[in-house]
Each structure stands twice: as structure tokens, then as C-alpha cells.
Image (cartoon, rainbow, N blue to C red; front, side):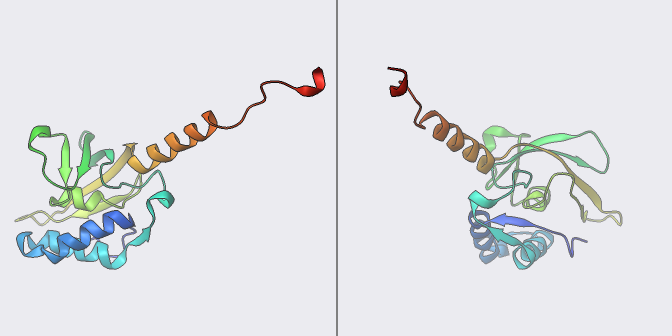
Amino acid sequence: MWTNHKCTLTTKDTTILQTMYDRRHALPDTIGDLLKHKLDSATVVFSDDISANVVTLNTRVSYRIAGRQPQTAIITQNRMDGMVGQCLSLDTMRGLAMLGLTETAEICLPRPHDVTPDRLAVETILFQPEAARRKRLQQETIEHSLRLVHDASLS
């Protein structure tokens, strides 16, 4: 289903997935298989080097399932009871599948008791924490840079 699919993960996301894999006995087989595939085939980069168009943990993403209306969710590490319908946890097939994908990427997801897999498409990344952090640091650098207050040659 998802073989030969490109995936880019941050070192932090890789560590989280590795821990999940070590505890995979609590996960359904299909999620365990996808988890193993992601860990085996991912390109791992530092958080500062991840492209802004890649889904990382805590990214808010617009996605589409099987051509239906787009949905928006935040990719989270754990289920968040207070944010029902707003988050996709990494222990769900959709949440795990999106982690590491780029905008416009698609992946086929198996469905239980059905021969036709769901096609999940990442539409747009609305917020990525790593890109937001880089932008904030860049703005702080500009604000704190030296500026000419008085030109001595004009005196």
C-alpha cells in the first residue's frame, strides 16, 4: 500500500515513533506495519532543517479522504479528549500516515473488511511549529540588529 513512499521526519518525531514501535503490542497490526515502514524508509533531519511543507508533530493540516470535503486537524502525539474532532493522534492510521508527508502528497490507507483502500491527500499545511519557530527567530534577529542612530559624518 505505502511502499516506496517518501517520508521526512525530524529527529524528535523519529524518537517518538521509535518509542511507539517499541510498545507496538498495544497497536493494531496495520498501524504497526505503517510505523515500521516509516522508521525504515524515512529521511531524518534536524528540526531546523525540515522543510515548511512537511507534516510534523503538532502541525495543523488540511487533508482530504477519497476526494471528499477537506478536513482540518492537528497531528498530536496522544489522543486529546478536550479537542475531539480537532486532532489526529499518531496512534490512528490517518495521523500516523500524514506524519512526514509533504503538501499535495497522497497515500493509500487500508480499511478493515473492505477491498478498496482510502486515498488520503495532504492538501495544505496551515501551521508547522518548526517553520513558525524559524520565522519568529528571524524576526527577533531583525528587531535586535544594530541600526544607525547618528551619522558622525553629518556633524
